[in-house]
Amino acid sequence: MTGHNKQSDMIERTFQHALEFNADGVMAYWHDKNTGKSGYVKPMYASNKYVGPCRHFELAYFTPAKSTQYHNGIACRRDQVWRIH
Figure 1 (cartoon, rainbow, N blue to C red):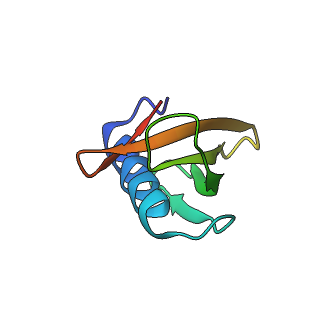
Figure 2 (tube, rainbow, N blue to C red):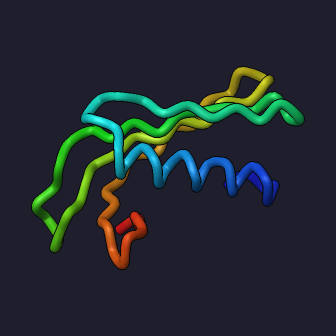
């Protein structure tokens, strides 16, 4: 999605931390000083669709040109890592 390895790592760390520790609706933000891109991960609510624990989430990705991308999905914890289902 980002085309930038360090930025992808930053987003992945934010994603993992938010789904593991943030309450529903509490956003975790990230910002890449080098590119000006930023975004957030927001856990939404638990999901019983798959073997859990699973959570619905929203991910937003902002660019300096003011274009915004939103992604929604479900992630489940497997082997102590949250994976998008």
